[in-house]
Each structure stands twice: as structure tokens, then as C-alpha cells.
Image 1 (tube, rainbow over the protein chains, first blue to last red):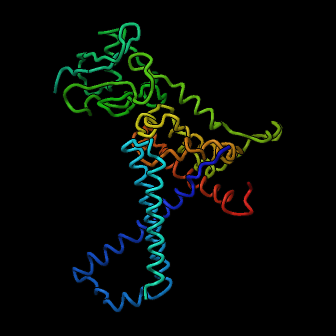
Image 2: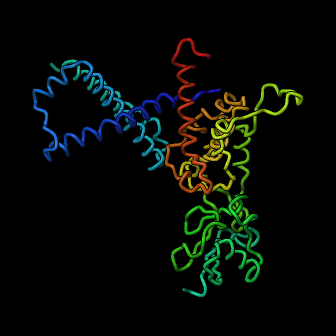
Image 3: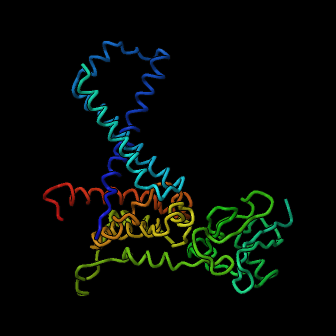
Length: 116
Length: 247
């Protein structure tokens, strides 16, 4: 029996959704709410440079950005497919959405590798 | 408080009408009445030709599901009083072929239900002399929620995917597959996985969640499907990605 290839895409989608849900609210709360209101001290440029200099930080950033892109791709694909009912464009939509996520992943990977 | 309420009921009598038509009925308004009581009043006093399904009047049989003001509900569990004043629209559940008036055709669901083997599958039955298959309360709790499904079809009617992709096997059938998958006495997990891991199985679902919102018995089919997606993904990883996989 033909098996659907969807599990792989869904795994990326759900991993991205979960990571984004865990990480982004914390970043928003700290950097955009707590810091401007003076509840916590805003990290300096040098702090952030040092933080991103660590390989583990880059790995986490890579995972968050790339998986969040695949989460977007999957959701946007089905928004177009079911929401606008573009069934005849299924393949094109899939190529554009997952393609964008793939390109975004590669750009992120490249940027994190070459960043001094 | 008004003395009467107007029900706009969708009629379809294939021998008289070529398509659905609306008919208005004025029925007494009583605060203790459900929409089904109003329909029964119409049937008994105003128009004996109105056709609809009902049986238990207490949310157990699952046969009186209809669209009331566009929402899929059990008419035996929806008070007239809860609905906005003015006329109340009653239609057959969305997404199914209508046979007559408020009665729709369930054949598609019944065929799909059969495909997921909604019964205890045993490779080998133990002899009667060995006694019953025992189960702990914890093992019962694993699947009990899914066993509350009364096949009322509200979840199919609420599911936008079922309307768009009629081949989708649908929320209740998947929840019922999970009812047996999580039963400690069952051995049919793989057979069901082969059916449900296809696109028209779980993967057509995009987690809209309306099925769980309308479910009158809190089966939560949306959660059943997402749980199944995780199992199917792990199964897929085992069989496709890992070189020592089973296929």
C-alpha cells in the first residue's frame, strides 16, 4: 500500500509549532515588554554578540528559525489549498511553500556559519 | 416571553420538489422545550408529512443531529429558549446527501467506519475456558473517552475538510479507531495504521478542531487525530528513515 509522505512534513510542522510556541513568547516578553518597561536590564550589544558566539546558541537559533519556517510553509500551504480551494495548484503551492522554507533554512545556516 | 416561535424547516420531498425548499411553522413556545419537541409538535399537530430521525430524546442515540441556525447540534439537547429570538432555522446536517426533509444518507460514513475495523481484533482468541480478558481501571481509562461516540455525525457536519474532500475518512471513524487502538485487549493497531496513515486517513485533517467543539459527548476527535498523527509519524520514522526499520 502506498504510504503518505506527509508524516515527515507534519513532523517538521509540529516541531516548528512547538518550538515557536515555547521560545517566541519568552523572547517577546523579555525583549519587547520586560526590558522596555525596565523590569529587567536590557542586554548590551556586547552581551548578545558573546551569546551568539557560542555554537550552542547558533544551533538553537538554526533549529528555531528553520523549523518555524517549515511550520509556516505547511500551514500556509493548507491555507491556500483548503481556504482558497486551489486544488489544481497543489503541487505548485507545495513547491513554493516548502521551497521557501528550504531556502530560508539554507540562508539561516549560511548566516550562522559565516557570522564572526 | 413570546407565546409562539417560528421554525423554518428545510423540506425536500423528492416526489414533489426538485430541490430543497423552506417551510415555516408556528409552534407554541415553552421554556422546557427542546428543538426536537417543537419538531414533534409539528409532526403531531401541524404537518404529519415532515420527516426526521429521532429516538431517545436524551442525547444517547445520536439520531436527531441537525443544523439549527447553521450549527450542528443534537436537537434533543438544544433548548428553544437558548436560541436567539425570532425564527429558528432547522436543516439537515451539512455535508451529506439528503434523502428526505431532515433525513440524510449515512452510507458513506458506515463504509468508512468498516475500513478501520471498529471492533476488538485478536490474532488468536483465547479459549472460553481461560475466562474473560481482564482490564485494569487505568487500561479502561485509556480509551473510555473515545468509546463515548454515539455516531451522531455532528463532527462530520462541522468538519470543513469532509465537505471539501469527501474521501476523508473523518473525525468519528478515527476516534473510534483510537478507541480500539488504545484498548489493551486489541491487536489490530497495524491493520488500522495501514488504512489511516494514507492521505484520506489522518493526513487530510488540518486540525481545524470544529469536530471537538460540536461533539455532544466530549469525545474530542481532534485530539484523537493529532495523537494518531504522532503515532503514524513514529511508525513512518521506524519504517522509512531508520535503516533497520521493519519495511
